[in-house]
Figure 1 (tube, rainbow, N blue to C red):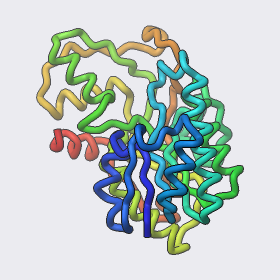
Figure 2 (cartoon, rainbow, N blue to C red; figure 1 turned 90 degrees about the vertical axis):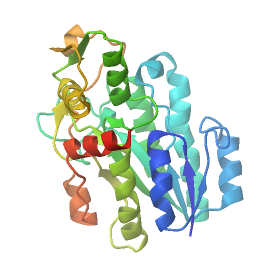
Figure 3 (tube, one colour; figure 1 turned 45 degrees about the horizontal axis):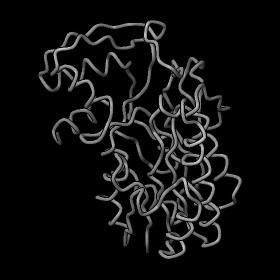
Length: 283
């Protein structure tokens, strides 16, 4: 089986590159080789590789920048997956796509189900929802994984930003009223071949699945855990969302219900604390 993996240098893509070979030959490409903002680039690579599975780990993930460049975010996160879905349908291939908790507005008091109605608060969320809807409308066989608060030992993410700012001795004021499940690239990559194998064998249905670490915390709680796990001394204090003046609003509740993933694929991701310790060991 041949698998086309996009975004090989990103957080999820680089981790998946280590686990997907368990299923078959992996052809991994970066943005220079396959530009999700260019339909010609997408079609050219897919038609050359002719994969049985396409794993789209590439995305426009800069939330603040997406607010300023919504057209570009929509091309990468919405129109790019639409072209991938069209090509997958033509090949009879399975398309695997990563989406986000930011498709929801965060107003629900309990964890979000796959069946809950999306209502994104910002441009990034709107662009990712557009991608989801395009894939569903294409008729291609697909898996969409909504995850949250993704981080890794490499790249640009909350974990590495907190450690850098702490080393610089800067006082850190971190939001303590937004709840979610920090999910590492390693746990996503470990689960990916398991559920892919089940879907390809028709042992589990396709569609949308929530896939996040177990448990929940706040951004402040996550920061505190990072410093405790690394023995880092930091000037850390909690603030409310109202005190943190960001351009785009973020959902207050980003907790996703993972029961469907466990029921259909027998997969339950580790707790976010376990995931953090695994990434810290990889630093």
